[in-house]
Image (cartoon, rainbow, N blue to C red; front, side, top):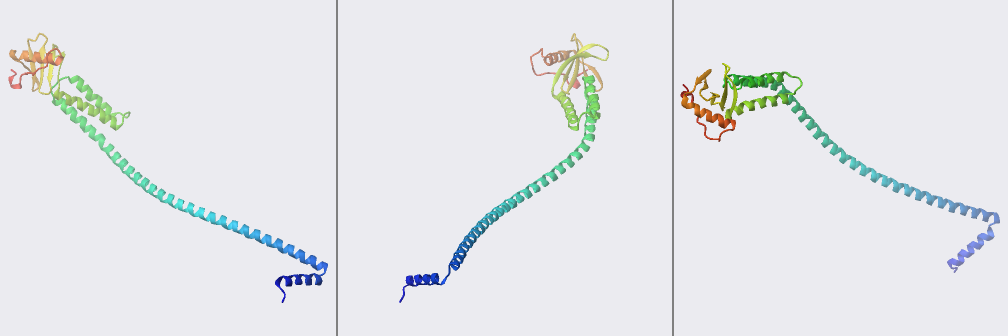
Amino acid sequence: MFTKTAVSVLAAWVLQVAATPSDLNEIHRADRQGLKASQQAQQAIEKLDDEQQSLIQESRQLKHEIQLASHYQKQLQQQIGQLQSALEELGEQRRQLRQTRMQLAPMMDEMLLSLTQLVRADLPFQQQERQQRLDNLQLLLQSAELNQGEKLTRLLDAYQVELSYGYSVESWQGKLGDGRLVNFLRAGRLGYFFLTLDGKAGGRWQGDNWQALAPEQLGNVAAAIRVASGDGIPALLQLPLIAEAS
């Protein structure tokens, strides 16, 4: 029995004996071509494998980008929704502001009218100054140079000044209707007095004219004038009531 090695050697010998030199060359050429084709096929397979891996990587990257884009789109939709809500709220605020501005002008006119009526019905102290303030407010409300907010601020300032007269005491010199120079005293809105410079005569405004003070009342008014002017020690003021004026 032949061994496998012996058979192979015998087969090779038979081929060599049977084949001519040209046949052997053809066989070698075919072997080389087969080897080359095998190498080319291997290279093609490797190239296809590389391309497949590249496509897989690109697919993964594309999926990742799609996920990011989807997440960004959700965030963008939320932001757009919030922006839309903010715009709607802003539109409502603007509508309310326009309505308020439309109502503000007549309201300020009413406030000025009320302030004017207060001054006219009040004690007639510092009338020129107070009337000038009212005239200035009238011009201010008609001015196009100031906005509504500034006009309202000026109007409220004037109200504050008038309100302050109710809890303050002050004294100043001025002239009576007959031209006499006297000291005036205003005690809040409770009393409005005058005292001549020599202290010998005085009066209190009552109703629509001056009522003379009794001689025993002059000292209290003089003391109150000194305190209001800063020349006296602050103390409880004892001023004549309306019923005490003669």
